[in-house]
Image (cartoon, rainbow, N blue to C red; front, side, top):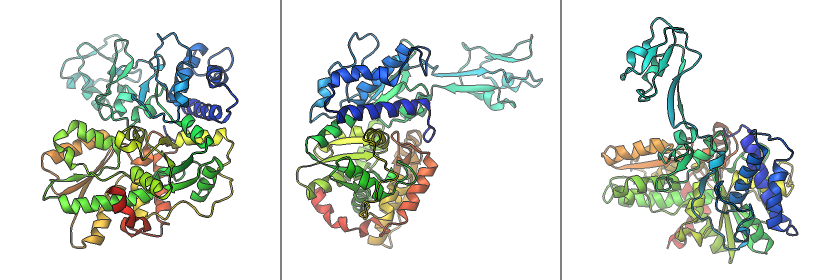
Length: 507
């Protein structure tokens, strides 16, 4: 639903904006203000989106808590919205698990999967649906000639739907579960969606595919603004997928000017870290494949690498040990600027999970999505499209580094670096988008089909430009990133000025 301004996007934007306003207005008592906000966001006596205004406000209350980084509470917990609010105002507040949460009383309890005959059935003479059913679950209603399905016999194979000439038989799946490539979503005892956190890798695809807005992740909007207000030197590290996310007129120079207007010390493009990551992975691949490892998988997508380690533990060492672009950029910033705080701003929910790791916490202090960042701009009334351009732009990253944001871009960058280092070496590549396809890719690699290959996995179909924190259509983002990447002063990742810093950053 990215690029379509639905009611869910409207509510999410209001919540992010109001949390940011609450941080900026230090004269407001936070505990009192957060109690008032559900009434401000959902005013009046009648519900706007559901038929119960009190239910709407209760859902908004939990969304506000999650946006403050606080834990979700169920409908049975008799406590005010402001419960534990003091925890949100501590300087070292990190994301705490679980990151992705189902607001149970917002969930529609959709069926996990069902096959049924719609009113579109014409009662045709052929009735191929009856003939193909392996369990005799489809029968003929003699009163109207239409097909009907016995749910007790149906095994949901979908063969009847496939042969219906009128497409009158449909297969419905719970949208959040259908989007989950880890099969981590099931039903609880009340039929509500429930996440198995042992399986979940926090890709956030369930979040953007739930049409009831019942799934939300935690945010650090409040904590980032508070850090800036306390005088910390906070630097923004902006992911390569940023192009076009804040409007078609927003150039890198305008984005930098807008970030400085908010109080950020400066802005760095994470594509410079992508360049460093590509060089490190290229060197590792040449050294290790196939002598030490049968294949090597890229490391920059945390949901993909976590999925690989969870489901294919025997091949965990085949996931590149290279630092991710986010971590490398953060290290570079902190090397150049003493006592700097770094906030990664990107498209990805899983980056929040990555930043929770003890090995990364010292590098990355905060993580925000583009969508959350848009709420901050709105709260501070920054007209980002019309702000005066900062002529410095962002950074001198390479074309390949900027293309990390689109599927296939990571592998291409690594291959291009190897081509520069070892012109005669041929590299074979296989890539997959979406965790379901990524699983298939690794299953084939496990079976020996990709020995000697470089494997690229992206948890989000389309690449980082399709992450849970993006706001525009995926195809539009892919085009925008490619056009911006083409303007880079360097083509390959090994040609940028920051490559000389790599050894110091990974030692």
